[in-house]
Image 1: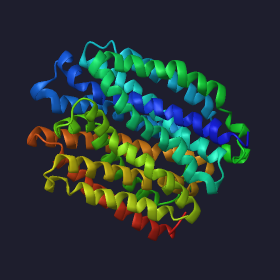
Image 2: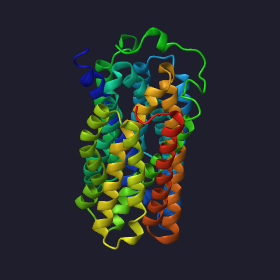
Image 3: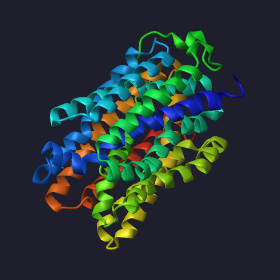
Length: 403
């Protein structure tokens, strides 16, 4: 197992997150015709679509927080298998929805189950990989699957939508989970008790305290991750439609929507390796907030639509490659081992759940008032710079310059 844990644990969970993110982004592709069929196109589109896109994140928020805490004594293998079965069924049956209420219900189920799923990944990373491997392990488990789905997914799903219609997006992604990822999880994943880097004492712990979560500096990490998630979700939820508004249609729309995430994948390979070798994870994570924020606030000043798309792509790609894996490594190495799952759930629930929901509405409101996605993207850029400042203070108050 020692020699193949990267493939068996890391690779399997990467595929799982790939499927999970396809299930998240399919609605962003399907919305134009789905809104017409369910009666919220035209003047209702911006605000109603904000609800449709963020209902997933509303369920995701609470499920991350409470799921991470409530499942801390259960084996993560059986948790992730059960959850994937439920959310894949919800995704498949979304293809049959005939009302806005039913759509929101299916998205809430998806968000709730994927919310409980997310913190289990940190438990796998902490248990199966040594401390000096964690940036690479997190990149594999919590990064590559996500960004492969966002890059390849938009390229694949956009033509499927254009050719077959919105229903088949949900049929296709639901079947991937039920008949490919789910059997793979059952065969490949191992029980936590067999993990090489987690002892029995670490699995069972007493009360979950602020000290176990890393003390007061954890609030600075929470704020930084909140702003990063706001930029990520605020752009990702609306990206296919924003790219279309810049004049890209058909295959170029799919490719343009994928470009930020292709950039992220390319940059992440050297960044995760260098951050593990140098230990300068805090510096990489801080730059992963300040640099993209600076780029995003420039968008309203750019007249050329192609350059706008390139700036968005560089901002998201640079930010994700420098911040994401390093942030989760910082968290995993600064909380008590048994608190890793709950800590990951709390931070991801607050950031992706609440922050992502707020960001989706920020972009939607600016879209309604200005007719453009760029002002909302600029506001998110300003916020993520504040997140970078928060990381600087985290280094000061926690006494850490590297992790």
